[in-house]
Length: 233
Image (cartoon, rainbow, N blue to C red; front, side, top):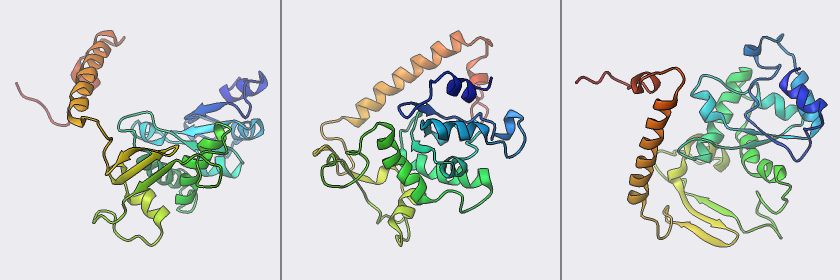
C-alpha cells in the first residue's frame, strides 16, 4: 500500500492530524506514478487532515511539493511551517509561493494570498483554534508588525505581496503574543543575542561532530558538509 492509502484505510487520517511535508505522493513525478495521478491528494482531502508545508528544507535538497496549488484546489487545509534555521516564516511563505509556481509551471498557481492564509488561518484551523491566526473580536491579541519601508523592500503597492516576496525576518519590528510584547524594535527584550549565538554555535559544533562519528557511511566532515571552496592546509 502507498503511505497515504495505508493511513487512510487504517482510519489514522482525520481533521486532527497534521502531516508534515507530504512530498512523495502519487502526484509527484519522482514516485513513478502516471502524470496527473491525484489519488493520494483525493484521500487527503476526504480525510480532512492538514498538510504542514515546510518548503525551504526540501527545496535545498532539490525537492518540492507537487503541488501546493493542487492541494488547495482539492480542498486540503494547508499550513506553513519551518524546520530549519533560521526559523523565518516569511522566507517559508516566499519559497512556498515560488516553488508552487515552479511545480505547476504556472505563475498563477499559488498566490501571495494563498501562502499568507496558510501561514495564519491554515495553522489555526489545523489546531482547531478560531481565536488564532486573525485579527478579530474575541481572538487572541497576536500581532506581528513588519517594517516595509526599507530600500530592499521597494514598492509597497500591495502589502501582502511585498511581505511575501520581498521582506524577511529582520524586518519584523514588533511581536505581540496574547497581548504581551515579546519583540520590540526588532529585538527580544532582555536577550543577549551575541551570547545566544555563541552558545548555539557550540551546540551546533557538538551535534556536527556527533553526526560525523555516527554516520553509517563513515564519511568525513568534508564529505558530509563540503566547503564552498577548497581549504588548503
